[in-house]
Amino acid sequence: MLELNEVFETNAMISGENLDVRTITMGISLLDCCDSDLDALCGKIYDKITTCAKDIVKVGDEIGLDFGIPVINKRVSVTPISIIGASACRGSDDFVRIAETLERAAVEIGVNFIGGYSALVQKGMSKADELLIRSIPAALSRTERVCSSVSLASTKTGIDMDAVKLMGHIVRETAELTKERDSIGCAKLVVFCNPADDNPFMAGAFHGVTETDCVINVGVSGPGVVKTAVAKTKGESFEVLCETIKKTAFKVTRVGQLVAKEASKRLDVPFGIVDLSLAPTPAVGDSIADIIQEMGIEYVGAPGTTAALAILNDQVKKGGVMASSYVGGLSGAFIPVTEDRSMAYAAGIGALTLEKLEAMTCVCSVGLDMVAVPGDTSASTISGIIADEMAIGMVNQKTTAVRIIPVIGKKAGESVEFGGLLGSSPIMPVNPYRCDGFVNRGGRIPAPIHSFKN
Image (cartoon, rainbow, N blue to C red):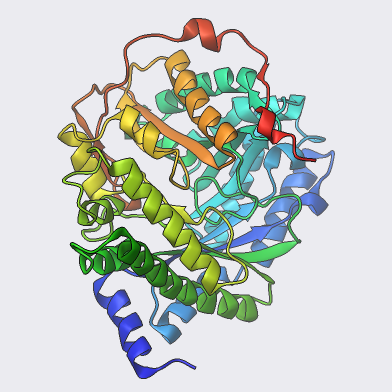
């Protein structure tokens, strides 16, 4: 039973510390939509999404009002489209037709994003996988709400370097096709190592093939809550710091559990997982960098930053696991540059570099996220950055990702403004030395020795 002081405490987290349910995401399996006729396939996809998720926005808004907990985003994820479109799509334009169908469905039900325009190619590309990947630039330039992800690596299989090389070109092409809007198409495109099948956060959400037909996953976020708690531990030992973060994460996850169970009941859809991810926004006081700085780091990126982030990520996971039997997704700390006001500021003054960000991804829950780089960054350099991040995930048996935005027409030191939750940031400089000879080798980097655990 909740005590009165716990009610007051939660209310303070919501009203003054930016605690929110960042997303209710309905995962929908499209496996039963497969059809060799493209028109029939698109019709089935549209009908299933608009039937299963017709009430998700209404229910999310009602829960927010009934419980006084802000539910910011309502979203949908679907089975990777390269699988669903394999029998019907003969060319990349056919896959774009499916993307446009997803867009129409998203508009009809009112969600802000729909994820799953995806391919899983960590061990190699099928013909359908390659067609979907090559269609991504056109698909993202012609839609507003469709998000795309590609899995390029895993600890079990190694890294598909042919796909890594191709994705460097795909990122560049996506940037070019959306250059009138500061290459915003790349903000809806992410590549993964070891992706989670039940991640509710965009742009990486897709509905894994091992998932049930329809499921509700909830993502909770509360960097401001954790920052306030950490500020009270100034001068205390690391034991006190860790215990404080863990207890705070527990309380935040309980809020997510409450909303997830209620959404599941009202939508008559099974509850999947709660993802407790400290996902920042450009709002003041809603920053991962601020938490790290409260720990005693002058600016994020300074010596000690990686250790501080490791503490934060680990204690968030420990607190979340205590609070819910079904913690999943990514659960931890995200470090997107443009979406975190203090992270972007640190990048602007030179405290945070691309190389330091890469080091931080060894201990966070995602990777190089929402990083704006010069528009003339080459495809091979982008592929090299992706390969480095895939290697970190593969060797460390963790999820890593890259969402990088070469902003066409802009150079290092200039700034970019995406607006809304996507935020703004300075353009970060990239190492000028090339890696073409490495990227062009082709083939697959084998899985590490510790992957053999059967």
